[in-house]
Image 1 (cartoon, rainbow, N blue to C red):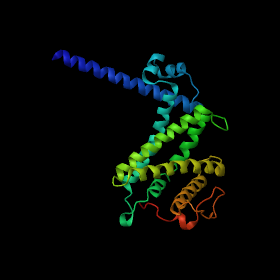
Image 2: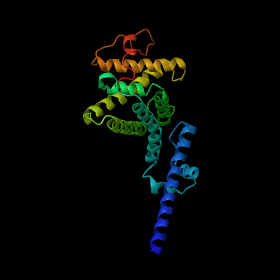
Image 3: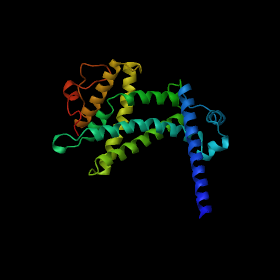
Length: 241
C-alpha cells in the first residue's frame, strides 16, 4: 500500500512537471511571436527562451506549427470566453425568438475581435502583403478551431437548437467577421480609436442587417466608405435573441 502511494506521488510530480514544461513552451512562443510580430523562430530559440531542451519541445509538440497554433488558440479563447459571458448575461429577447447571428454580433461589439485579428495577421504574415502557404494554413486552422468553439458555446446556451443551424450561424459569423476586418482596416488604417470603433460597429450592423434581409443589398448609410448599415438596421434587435 505504501509502495502504491509512493508511485502515485511520483506520477503526480511527473504530470506537474510536464504541465509546467508545456506552459513554459507555449509562454515562450507567445513572447517570441509578440516581440517580433511574427512566428519565425527556431526550435533552439524556443527551447532557450522556455529553459527546456529541444527534446522536451518535441515531447509536447510534433512541430513548431503546433506550438504556434496553441498560442493562437489561447488568443482566440479569450474571444470565446467573452462571447460566452455575454450570452450568459444577456437573455433571449421578447417572445423567445433566437437570432443567433445577432447575438454573436452583439457579443463582439467591445472591439476585442477587431484588435486581435489584425495582430494575428501580422504575426503570421509579417511584412508580406499576402501570407505564404504556411501562414495561410495556420490562420485557417486557427479560425476553424474558433468556429468549432463558438458552435460548442452556442449549443450549450441554446441546447434546443438544431446543431446544423448553430454550425451554419457560426460559419457565417466567423467568415463575416474576417471580411468585416478587411474593410475595417481599409477604412481606418488598422488604428484602434473611438472613430475606428464606430466603423467596426457599423460593419457589424451591416453584417447583421444583410443576414436579416436574406443578403439582399443593404443601402449604405451616411457613415464611412467601409459601408455602415443604415440607421434603421443599426438600432434594431441589439441584445435580442
